[in-house]
Amino acid sequence: MKIKKITAIIGDMQLEDVEHALEQHGVTGFTVSTVRGRGKYSNLYTRDQLVSHSKIEIYTSTQHADDICQLIMKAAEIGSVSIGFVAVSDVEQLVWVHEQRVASVDDFNFFEGRAET
Image (cartoon, rainbow, N blue to C red; front, top):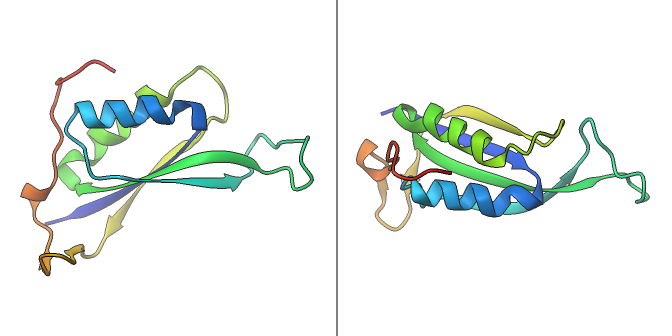
């Protein structure tokens, strides 16, 4: 089975909306962390000019990757430039530590049209 890793960097204010959208569509396995960086926008009020963002990481099947990517972009959209990005990359293997087995397609959920975001 092919596995994808989705990494989304979004504004902190969009995090709650994105989390809610993911959960409403059955995506319950994701990691959130605070990151700092600089893209098109920099924070001129701080010495290092870095901006705080939220990073979401999701492992999923190839089958669900595009739908999850679109869901994140829709939920995070606020009509502002340089609000973030979503990257999708290949994962060679994903192994569940607690079960000591390789992940299968049945381990990943995404429910089409389950809820409006």
